[in-house]
Image (cartoon, rainbow, N blue to C red; front, side, top):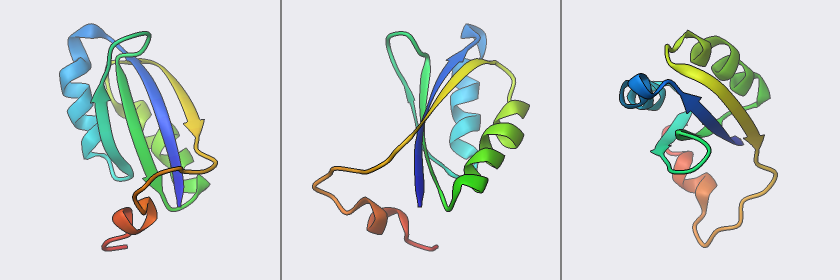
Length: 91
């Protein structure tokens, strides 16, 4: 399982629609509207790096309103919850 956080700058007129479109993409588990330097944060959980690459370079590029992204790969999760078990349901 690969987890990534994608920080997104968006055209202000598209933020609401874009957030929903992102949340509807397979592999994106959560989308947050945030304050600060970025407009949206997408949490991605996919099977492997190839699936992440496809999501970013094939699916996300089709969405209108994204002006800039910064992707961060997660090396390790530190949590009181078993995240792998929570997100493996149905896989």
